[in-house]
Amino acid sequence: MCRILAITNSKGGVGKTTTCANLGAALSAAGKRVLLVDNDPQGDLTKVMRTDPKTLKYTLANLMNAVLDDTELELFMDKAIVKGEGIHYIPTNSKLAGVSSRLVALQMSSRYRGGETGGTPCELVMAHVLDVVKDAYDFILIDCGHSMDLLTINALAAAHQAIVPVQAHYLAMEDMADTLEVIKTIRQGINSNLTVGGILLTMYQGRTNLCRSIQEEIQADYGDAFVVFSSPIDFSIRVAEHPIGAASIFDYEPGNPAAKAYSAMAQEVLSYA
Image (cartoon, rainbow, N blue to C red; front, side, top):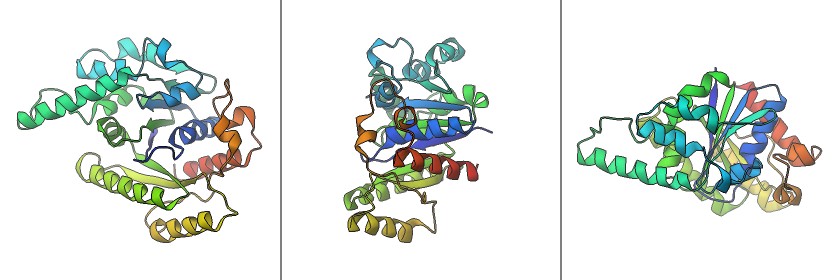
């Protein structure tokens, strides 16, 4: 059975895109069929996957618009999925911002009409898209933007689990708490199957008292309720540099501690598959 994971946090710069790309690569290396979905109009994951968003004719926007327009998804699906070596992905570009606006308009229309729109609920468009392809994959990883907008809500409504990367910094912990509350709300109202698949500490510097203190605090506060991945992702200039032509750290520096941590994370994800 396919597992859909949404990589999300309401704070930007915590490593969501990096985690999506590298976890996907690690799962693929473990023999799993992986589809990545770029759900951020900025298209950062698309760029990481060596695709220029400006050149794209078919993207996630086409697929979500097809659902909203009640047209055949199959007309666009094969064209939108980029089939790379070992990993497939659905790219995106700025046109996804237009989809976001349509979702807001649909939500407002639904409220005005007392909940009746005659079409797909605005929170479930992504779920309809992924229902068409999920049988072809073992894992679908959705890279979310830093805004808890209707695009992110769509990702969480479609997902089985949310993975929450959090930077080893106290301010980032506050945003993580807000994100966990949103996940709880969605589980109670839209997607009762949604759980927290794990909290991932990123940009970790184990030699500093601050990072060790934050790691201990996260484990103490959340370890009983959620998985806290045992291998934090070390801060690495090489991870940040991400050279052109490399979709993951495994492509250009497989011996990097961050690569080993993402491999360990993948094994933890597989262990509760």
